[in-house]
Length: 288
Image (cartoon, rainbow, N blue to C red; front, top):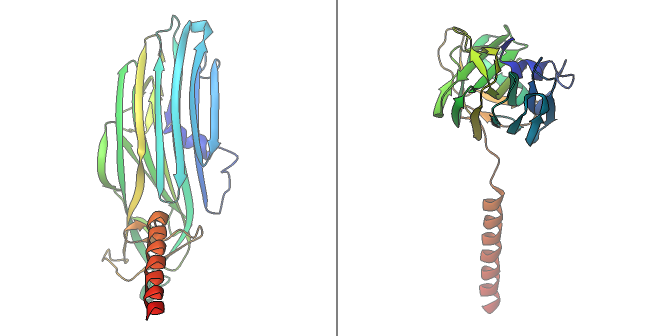
């Protein structure tokens, strides 16, 4: 069976996402295994904003077990996804996969008064930190997908990782925008493990295989994906400064990516310090 970034297709074909035109976050984890078709023995899926699946499934016909651990959570501009699995040596060929995916879609407008109504371009950066490993008949990968729609041109880009990474990355093609005009900006991060082959030269095309050999794999990106840069350019590809971002979700974006929420712990400590200072000042005044 040939699939293109299979977990992405599963997410987009979900009735929960079909036709969505408003900000949303969405996570899904799933496990599937079979001896004649991919899901005739195991089929389990969990959906929400923060989800997990931890189970050991017997495969009676194959006299084997499939151990699954998967988790995913989504917020605007920040994702966590991890999938791991171990297949005990079956006596019949088994086809299976375990997926973990997180998605966000926001409605964004980039405002820059001198270029309102003019075409521009958006360069998107992100930080990614995670590990990939596999043994036996298994393989593992992670796909990060970014897409834009509702602007002058729809564009989807996938970046596939097949080894552990830690650092900053950029989508290779700049996304087209119109200054002052809202557009949909969507990001998906998905981890996949199982007995599959990556079909060259397209790293997002995978051939799911039957196997009768033991195997295990991990694609652990629970350390997070963070949107780290939104750099804008005019129609001549000259950089622009002084732009502002607005979003349908209310999330704050800036040239440095998603703006983190204030740390409530520091806010609380600050409030306590202010309160103590005010109390001391009041006491001193009372003494006088």
